[in-house]
Each structure stands twice: as C-alpha cells, then as structure tokens.
Length: 201
Image (cartoon, rainbow, N blue to C red; front, side, top):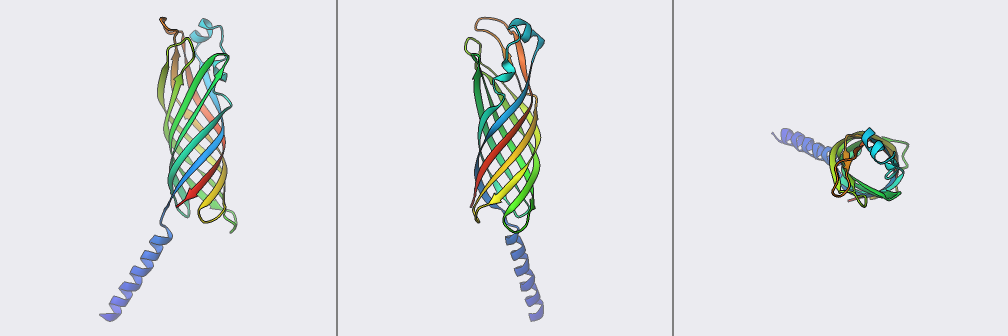
C-alpha cells in the first residue's frame, strides 16, 4: 500500500510539474505600424464625384494597437484592438479592428529569439467621416494570417516585428447632407507592417 501511495505521489508531482511547465502567462502589448488598404470605389461613386482619390485616404496610414492574451512555451493567443484614421483632399475615413489571433513559435537557438506565425479572425469597422457628407459606417468580418520575429529581452519583456494580411468585406456609403447616395467604398484587404512591445506577468 505504501509503495502504491509513493507511486501515486510521484505521478501527482510529475503531473503538477508538467502542468506548471505548460502553464500560460498573461501578457499585454502595444503595437505601431503602417496599414496599406485595398479599397475599391463603386462605378457610381467615380461618376458622381469625378473619380475621387478615396482609396488613398487610409492607405499607408500609421496604426496603433493594444492587445492582451496568454503566452505559452509553444505559442500565444490574444485579442487586439487597432485604430487608424486619416484625411486626404478633404475626405476623412476611419478603420477599427477587433481581432482574435493565435501564433505558433519556432525558437531560433537559446537566446530568446523566435519566429512566429499564425491566423486571425475578427471584425473590421469602416467609417466615413468626410466634411459635407453624412457619417456612415459598416462592420464586416476579418480573416487573415501573420508572421514575424520576436525577441525576449528578459523573462517578462519582449519586442517583435511582424506583418499581417487581412481580408475583409466592410463597406461604407457616400451621401451629401440632404442628398441621396452617390456610391460606396469597399475594403477588400489590409496589409500591415508593425513593431510591438510586450510585457508578460
């Protein structure tokens, strides 16, 4: 009986150690990057506004983000909120992303450097805020992939650089105050190069 209890105690200890080794740590992070958007204008919009450069408003725009999640030895999962807005030739648009992501890690040696790659699903809100036009917004889906490199600075802090590509179906309409719809804008995809800093606790 004592031998059985000893075996059970040893098994329990090993199991607890394995769970502790694989336990996830919480982390928070900040990101800053540049988003390049593929926005397509409807034919009606081009005719009614003489081919406006609306696809340039939030293309190549600086983007900030905050995120939080859990990180394990082999990967991480996290939620990200991002916001970008810009103006061009009097037009103003805004894009907001709420994304859920998972990354798998591939360590490069023993110095805390890792490659990462994963997938993202979420929502994109596209808003039309141009002066002289009715405000309009739409929420669409987002789905994509990301990859990059991460460097641990110590047991809590890390920095990274990455690229993410998203497909979306968000759309917004252009209509002057007191007037009818002139046409629409469709956000087909977004690509973002970014830098990030994370803190694990």
